[in-house]
Amino acid sequence: MKVEQLMTRNVDVCRADEFLNAAARISDRVCSCRPTDSLQAVLNVLRTTKVRRLPVLDANDHLIGMLSLADVAREADREHGRRNAEMKDADIAQTLEAISRPRSPREVVRAA
Image (cartoon, rainbow, N blue to C red; front, side, top):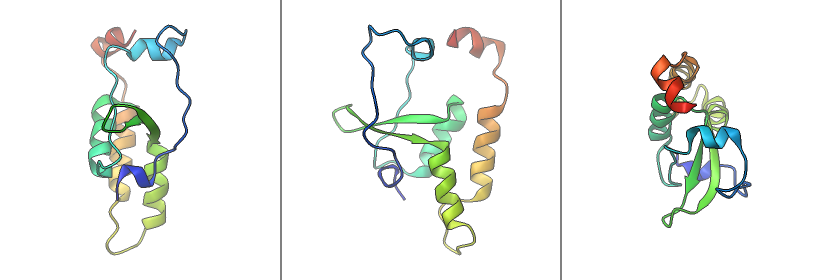
């Protein structure tokens, strides 16, 4: 399964000069994914960056959607019990645990 099959389309965007404290805290390093990325690759990004949502960018780096951990979890729920399920409950649990783990003091300072 690919990102494009689960992502939310028609998302709102903001300009760089608009005031959004949350966006400003992470502007130095924004992570994203492509619609053709595998869900396993996205889970790895979510785990390592400790975020719950990723912007989905096209080949020209234009925003075309958002993918959340909840989107992936819903797919895992739909696949639950299938012999050839791509998403495993353990993958979702490990990702949620990694995202929820407290950040180190260094990570908090960098995000502020």
